[in-house]
Image (cartoon, rainbow, N blue to C red; front, side, top):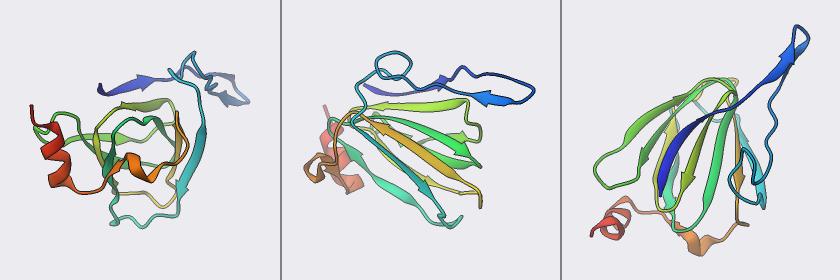
Length: 133
């Protein structure tokens, strides 16, 4: 469990490109929820939580932003998303924060579960406690 960067395949020609996202093919789960985030101010920090069970596929379909992910309670790792050809796959209890949004930033998120408030850990110290072995 943790996260990984996925390179997405693009199909197209001089007229444009298409990136297919297919459940249980290049997205490794059944998709139950899709949402997108846009219009976020550059200096605002979103996220600031982890999920106990949720799996997510996160794509910056326009613009750019920075993700800070902590999968092992040993520190946050920076991942910059600035292309629709890269996804972050997050599985399990991974702390996530994202910021440094460009004006045209649009984040698309695919999730394997419906919204469930009980699946969230919203306090970083609590997240660290959960990750202790």
